[in-house]
Length: 326
Image 1 (spheres, rainbow, N blue to C red):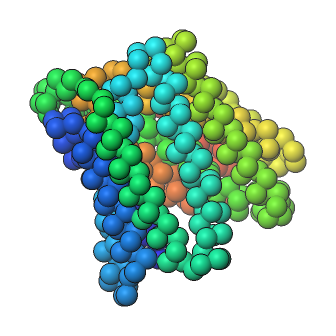
Image 2 (cartoon, rainbow, N blue to C red; image 1 turned 90 degrees about the horizontal axis):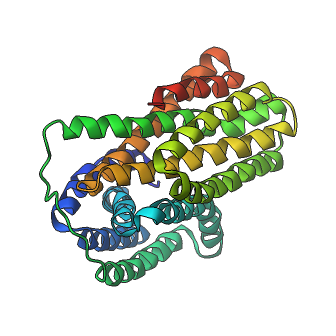
């Protein structure tokens, strides 16, 4: 029981934490969120019952909501204007590395010392990171001019902006969630071949994120975010055409992830640049929009598979991309 079913709802608390951070600053919220993360995992490690376990995972979801978007926001606050893309790309690539490295590391720890040890390690890391972040951001001075005042029509503009992230999440995860099964049933891939394909995807995602930071700083957030969305559309189209064409699927999965996460990173920089007085709120709403997109993408993928089969997934995802080119 990892509480995944609860984390979606609780991560949607992020806009509240973003609003508070715009009023009072981000350091204390980040440090408090990391302490809550440490406490929740400590409670999980020692959980004597299912109810105790349930409460601890709810707290874990709240801690993620109070930390993840604020890291993006504070980097946007302190990064030099001509380096914002590069700085945010480091955060995104670190996030991606944690996603693919976390599962195998957790499995290794569990095999040696049991499942409770995984959460004990997470609790220790959370406590250390809380101290590090509290000391690090204490040296940062940010002028908060918004002070939580929402201009008329601002919320609607924010929701329109972050809807791009929702569509991005749908177009990426409608396919990614079912990728292993699709490769197995359509191409007859073995477990090792599926793992290799996912590795190509992971490498493309990290490299795309890093490259996007450099390109964004050089050419601007708007140009790169639109360019990468066009490339993502083409990559998904190619993946759909060559999905059952042997080794070509590795190449197009790499390009799909490269273009997708290059666009994601660039768009984070664009949101940070366009909303200097409410950056915490915007990045928090964007975080919520991402998880809504992932959830809707999973639902859409299941619908597509049921009615048209796995091979239709890349084309459906491809068709969603023009919706975000504005």
